[in-house]
Amino acid sequence: MLHSQLEQFYDAHGDALFAFLLQLTRREADAADLVQEVFQKLVRRPGWMARWRNPRAALLRMGHNAFIDQLRRRTVRDRADETFLAENDLFVRNSADEIWLESVQAALGDLPPDQRAVVHLKIWESMTFRQIADALKISPNTAASRWRYAIDKLRQSLRHPV
Image (cartoon, rainbow, N blue to C red):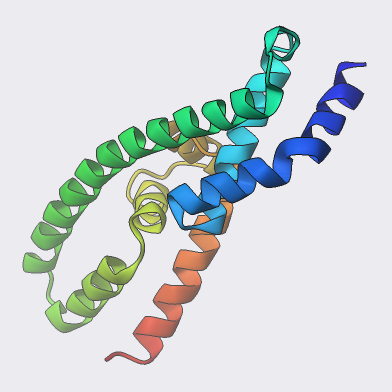
């Protein structure tokens, strides 16, 4: 019963939630992640929907709260990125092949912060996608996608340096 109710609720309001979150995040992947996060909360707490007077407004409020939480998580990730760059600078200074490592560092710096974070955790922390997902509060599929996008960008950038 709950599954079909939630499916109907998603069909009725999912597009509106996605559009709202896309407007806030300006990134489809982030908006999709937040929609997933909101509906996961509803799966875990099905009684919430029964108490709502205006379900669409309540869903949008949940989406907004998820967006605010994402901004807070990003602040933490940005600090981690700064630490990563500092560590990477030390690595470059200790390297015999500084030109290659400078190219790698520049290519890593060109990645979006969310992809850089996944690359760092995968390579330097030897984390699995599940562990990365838990650490970054994203789905394992999102972690894997960010990894693939980052690796593709790094390959392209390092094949054809600017």
